[in-house]
Image (tube, rainbow, N blue to C red):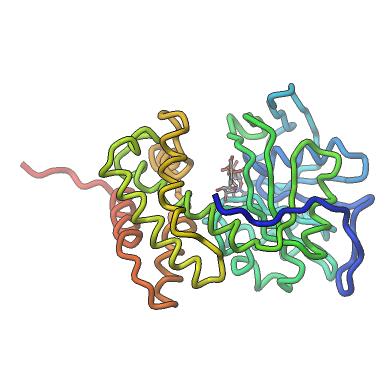
Length: 319
Ligand SMILES: NC(=O)c1ccc[n+]([C@@H]2O[C@H](COP(=O)([O-])OP(=O)(O)OC[C@H]3O[C@@H](n4cnc5c(N)ncnc54)[C@H](OP(=O)(O)O)[C@@H]3O)[C@@H](O)[C@H]2O)c1
């Protein structure tokens, strides 16, 4: 994969942003697989008071990790009106829940609040730019491999990593996790990291459409289709400032083929379960930004059209 420069280093004060490292109030909005895991780890750290903005209430957080069980009982709110200004807000709802998430930010964001956006895609800042200045928004590329078994009950398969942009805000985010087993890195080239992940994520639509897990990439025709999707992503990503080389489509296919053939990506899982999907954040964005740069993206556009049609109302077959 593309190599961007990572650094894990202590936070330092920079002009214009208040430093919140000790005794911070942290509110996690969206206590699902990602948010619940992070809230539980942060709750173990005596520097923080952790609260949760949830849609569905639960008694306590229980996280099954590879190293054992973690339990936490953060303060839980289910109504945005109950929330009050936090030092840090960690947004971990799905990308399609942005409108409802913004309602939490109205009460949670004060003049010095920092907001980390832990969502898929490349539009972290744009989604919340109307809620606070972008200097106080930290986009995060997440790789924690977790799944929600029930509200408040999460299984984390392996210790995760998160990547944020270098700079004052990113470094403060890195410092939040200094005492947790999750590795957080700052990079000088966040665009490349985010677009490299999107290059992989944009292919999940193929699995959803054919309703088959990763093993389908063993076939040459499907592998070619995956390469075509990624090639479009590479061209748009480059126009957006990412450094993506011509070998990326082949590497995405290799990753598919190297991994377990029964792997199910979250788009496919959501589609199969009849849940909303992050289709716009994973493929629609390539089409939208491609249009902005006059870059044709017919394969991504076709996939979006087909999956949207497949997930809409089913019509009975007439005799
Ligand atoms: N899971 C992973 O391993 C993983 C890895 C990399 C990236 N990501 C990305 O991380 C983001 C979060 O994914 P996830 O897997 O953690 O999703 P998830 O398990 O579905 O969790 C989303 C959570 O947001 C809550 N929510 C929805 N609307 C809300 C609202 N208005 N107010 C408060 N909470 C609300 C949901 O509540 P309910 O309980 O009511 O549904 C749920 O608890 C996504 O963009 C995903 O693509 C996930």
